[in-house]
Image (cartoon, rainbow, N blue to C red; front, side, top):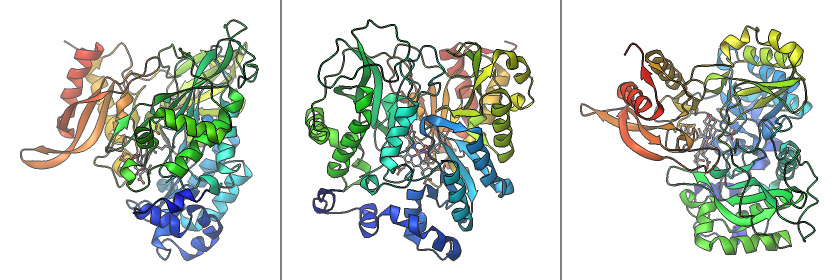
Length: 535
Ligand code: SRM
Ligand code: SF4
């Protein structure tokens, strides 16, 4: 890291001081020591903050039972890896559970400190890592969940996402170059036509776009990883770059164009250059103003772009006028033909993303028995099992597990997304996952819907459940009823995804949770064509 980080930052906030005292990655060498000390005897800063550099989160709601946030690049897991994750949970009985996250990732719960050395060894043995998945690091990198399967894809994102992760984490060993960013940082690489990664809400996103003409400096051959493509030969595949998208309690912004286009070959280098500029120049005094967009505000896009080019050592081509996101966003639930003749991928609805060890063992077995032993995760907190041959499909569809994880769920459960909420998260103002499911079921019982409605619950203004991208977003808040404080939600509407994605806005504030059902019922009837049963 350059000197800039330490020399230009006066007025350090608590977290900058903490990082200056001891880099978070330093705890990697101390895991065995922590395990023998126990969580109650550990240094509090190591326990509550620095362990997050290893992906291990102290949970004040369940002291002694930690959460482990993995990195699952592009959401691709082997059945073997899924089984190892399940076996980690199994030892914790009822305390052990896993959540599929809104970043196409997995979090494990109930983790005991004394087990960490063994768990890390197990993860390592199957090529999994949780390193640098929390605090001021780059989060799980998202990619097209049906990469390599979808006949209409423009680019198979899997290898590129893995390369970016390898660069950032030093192949999972930990990379001190990027372990002290001003704040968290999100990267997404879209490869399909439907923006399945929510490019617009990432700090850095790559969106498919063809550059007309070829042979210019900086333009790749266009052959690397490119799908079948219907474009004229002269056009070259690459990505337009978006920067600065983020949600926080203080401010939410969609990403803006960097006015730059890159070929796939340059994506890793561009990620590195952008992160170096952010690391060395990002605002560090006030954590509420430390995300990339605040630097873009201060500098303007032109200056930021010029700094990125300096780090990159070459000029970036201007963005192409049009990107290739021209579809509505798909949810991938159900059975779909793959581009490989005779093969299918099947999307299973995992209600609010919650799984237990037994579920994970069973999903791993299904993926092996019927597919190729591969499992994919989506940002909608669901699972895809790819590579199921036509000849095996009918039998697969009779499997008992598909009653629990449906391929044709009701219209409200289908698109339901929920953050962790009060069960495990101490920022939460309300319980989310259970309430979300109960509400969906209650509304489904009184209404007939002919289309899926994307309802996203988030327990507080941090917006991990992305209410701003939902048809109906529900954000936990403190409300009042009969003069008394009660749990409530602010309601967001108008979030659109896929083509021309834009963020929704808050339309109603402070609805007590106990009064929410009729409010949602009316919204579903007025805006989403729902009809009351027996009306
Ligand atoms: Fe988040 C903090 C959970 C996606 C914005 N988020 C947290 C913490 C770590 C707070 C804590 O320590 O308790 C939550 C852990 C709770 C737990 O026990 O699970 C938490 N965030 C989640 C997850 C698990 C929600 C989910 O149920 O899926 C998601 C994990 C993603 C992953 O795999 O890495 C998750 N968080 C998001 C997203 C959505 C996204 O990335 O698309 C956002 C909004 C987008 C963004 O970041 O710009 C998000 N989380 C936040 C913020 C606000 C950031 C800010 O700049 O202020 C916080 C608070 C913070 O960082 O200080 C936060
Ligand atoms: Fe926790 Fe709030 Fe994020 Fe939900 S939105 S996981 S309650 S920080």
